[in-house]
Image 1: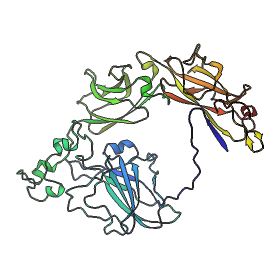
Image 2: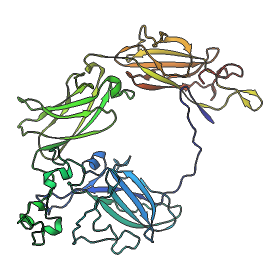
Image 3: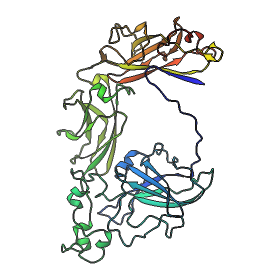
Image 4: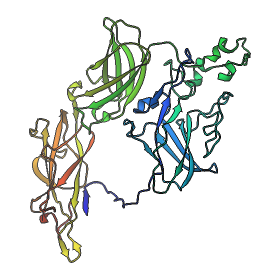
Length: 478
């Protein structure tokens, strides 16, 4: 058995458990909403291969219910609309293990508060379905929006993989929680979502349902949409820091906001968005760009909590040509040299001993000796691999390979000018034997961001050196 020694955290080991056989695997797609100007056009079905595909239609969560022959919910799961792995069209989401028998699966997009989208005045010409096994017809109810239903037979110890892709039609843009026309007004706040004849059924019945003197297609309420004929561009933005340093955070480098602008040749910059800085997330925004014969150059500027610039204005490689429904993906790394003034901050880190084989010598028959690590040896390098002269911990301890007492605590370097830095370390036995060490290049540090430095075991014949264990000494950091 292998052991994991942690210097500053207590970890619980999970016991192995039997894994159930999922009764089914499934996948869903989204169907766009109709174009008010061309309502007879076929709706576009969108494979969900990016989280953006969900967020652009207001569907962020999907609820799956397995319903038995009595119409009872046998199991309910809630998934993110974009499930990890869905970028592969062959990937599916896994259901639970169900008792053998017939089931209907109701797959439904739900709102942020998990409430269902329900049409209060459903079109009477739409077929009213029943989502239970053998339902006649099988399907979601007439008022149910963003919903699909299929049936299957659950068999013990088998997984049903023949379900068709569930198709979820996007909610109407007046209830999707999005500012679709980018005018600052959402859903019911938008005048475009105000009084109307009602729904599609009232727009073809030859009656003045809302008493405004206009009937069917002559009624402005029969074209209910936030959308307007403007040149709106959808953007995604992914930001990394300090040469894609995984330990770097926006807070650590002092970034609070990211200000994005677009500039056409000979014109003043147009502000596109000011976004909260988040590393590792995909940020979404949209903007209306004035028409231009030349493409727009896109730039980004990092700002602090007070809204003051702390980076240079950095260009993206991508340019943008205005046009409805354009989608632009932006990626950028903000390096240490881009900050004005340079970042002055400490590095902070925890030392963790990696997994090691459970083959300790014995203090007495049946009593294994404890691991004892009384000292650490730490050295700071720059990204060129050269030692950083004069580098110390905050308490003045040199980071030049000099041994220091091993204590389970967060350690801080002195203030550094970033740059990039790597920390190499060794965990030493009582007699100086190296029991654990980092890779030769060390591990990346980041300004004011806690890094976990893992020291890997140094094995002799598949075991740690005997000197790393002691029956009488203090346990040190182990």
